[in-house]
Image (cartoon, rainbow, N blue to C red; front, side, top):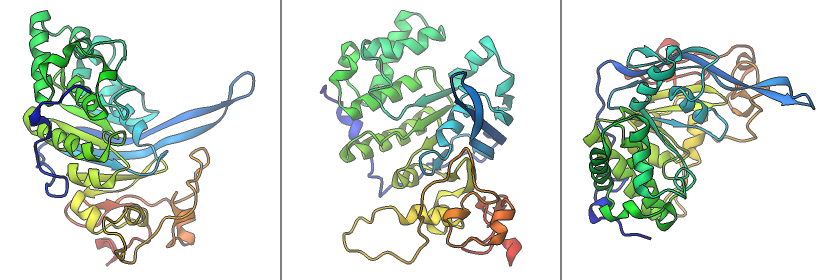
Length: 354
């Protein structure tokens, strides 16, 4: 693999650093009661026989300069929500506003211009880079599509971006297969930054990387956020990575947002049994270390085509009671810091229960 510049690995380890400070001003992104379903088609005529509710009545906000982490099991709707936020899919209901503009109302050139402000880094850096294109062409493509700068200005932008992500300028003539996984992810980050976005969605940014490289990429993401004034939405199964990157964390289960709040509050004192179960499943670094007593998640994830009535987690929840099958819990505050959870029988009482 081609060499990475020495400054690419600089920075603190994930265990030692904390989340970046967020701007407390107006939210950059507002998701309001959004739903999205996909039809189930069967038979020779491919007629719809049902609907998979991938996202169901989700509301959240992301402030400028903030990192919001989205966690949950596979199939919980995290990636679908990301596609809705980026206007790659249209919601069936609800509203998504970016910088005060309703995305569903944008068409043609207006939507194309708005896409400069929203970019994504995909999970597999090799699959997301065209193997037939050199690095220079990969990074030039967004600039050409958005008609930004002449060729000389584009070349300068490409060199500056490669330096930003810790890559040597000579890699512009190389192909994706000549790089390691970590280097390809750096190129994917550079490509996301070509059009100077304000919001970057990262889908499992470290899952395809070696453990030794993961901390380098996480440190790089934090540095790029500071230097480019970025807002992140980070989707990941890696709860340790999310804790390092995120200012706030949202927990999704079967299309629903079941808990959201500051990362420190979510990790240290989860209110929803599902969140506690996810945290209990994180491996302990010290072999033989005893875990504190906690809630565990058992059983299989129900079908999104036929979710349980009431609370969707009730079929796997050790605290479930009759009310859970009859009434869908709403998100309610658990403190004054923005910690909210949707549970009839939480792990600790909300102010309304006291």
